Length: 209
Image (cartoon, rainbow, N blue to C red; front, side, top):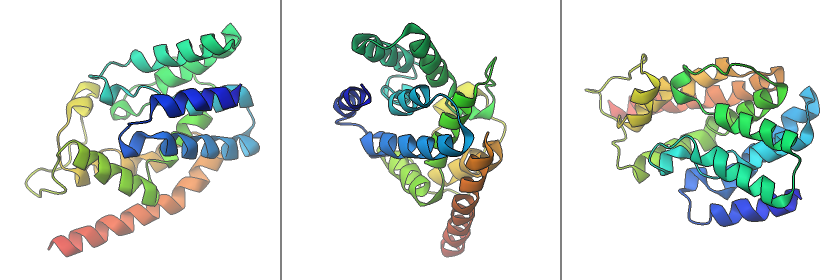
């Protein structure tokens, strides 16, 4: 059944922006399995949530936060997963996003912690740098503008609507993720990637004069 989910996800993301395509999903899936091996949790829920978490990212659907969970539910119902499994997966998808770092789920589960960490790992390090600048180019954003400082106190809506230069995103989100990891495994895996990003930004700023 996991293979059938993969087929659905690949089809849904066939023309996706490169930072949110099947290869992003595959990396998050593998990250999640790696963390699960050390932290435990319901493997089926973790795999399904990792595979379906970006089947319809709100960024590409007019900011609609409901479309992703709805599409994920439709896929799982069509494939005959148990209602309790579907509900847990949808809960994770509804609560996985950064959203400016200000939304705190009403409850936490180990499965949510693992999949959220897996997704955040793909947002940092070398892959995270590539994804950030690819998305910035996709949205027509400047690489860097010293006249536009990072906004460290954005609301959820301000974060969603931001058009700031891509370099600001490192301060507004990416540098924050290491300390927002939920699991011990996630924190360990995040450290090296975080350091690499710091070195990159330092070099970027030196070259920018």
